[in-house]
Image (cartoon, rainbow, N blue to C red; front, side, top):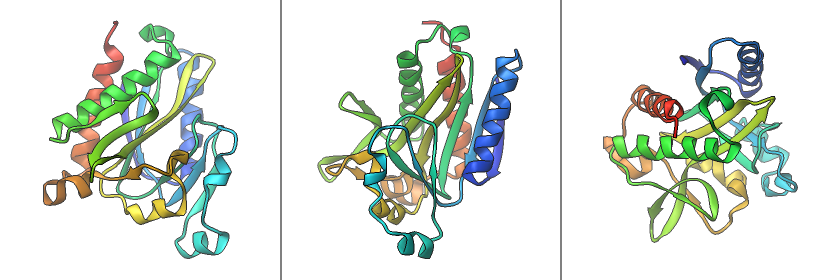
Length: 215
């Protein structure tokens, strides 16, 4: 699998790159893992009612320089911004003997493993998609997930908060879950927080390992 770091790229531009790679993979080209940061953007998934979880008005969004984009991924509403590692695997599910559900679980397992490698205990939650850590006695989301499978090939992926400015999440009800918080590696680890490059390296290694498994 080819790993490509796209650097800091607007969401719509990265989406176009995904679609280009998707067409290549669908035609038999090499599978790719795209790593990227986005300028501040709120994205809406295809879940009905996702827009009602956007609590900021246009003036507040403009003041903070946040774009709003309707995406074709699954899930609800989320935020992407600098300091967040976003990973988009473009792979053929059938080549990895994966159903959509098992593919999602592999991605989540890869993130949990990445955080373990970096010294943070995290877990999945059957009641809520994503990866979670315990803070102040309640679960906080540290990584969001939203995917689309088109003609058997994946699009979109995961977004792991590293040094993300968490104030941006006040503009939304993240994933529609009012009772849960949001956190980041920086908030959890403080001065021990690794660099974005280190997190990208660790996440890419775990994702490749998870997708290479045959069972």
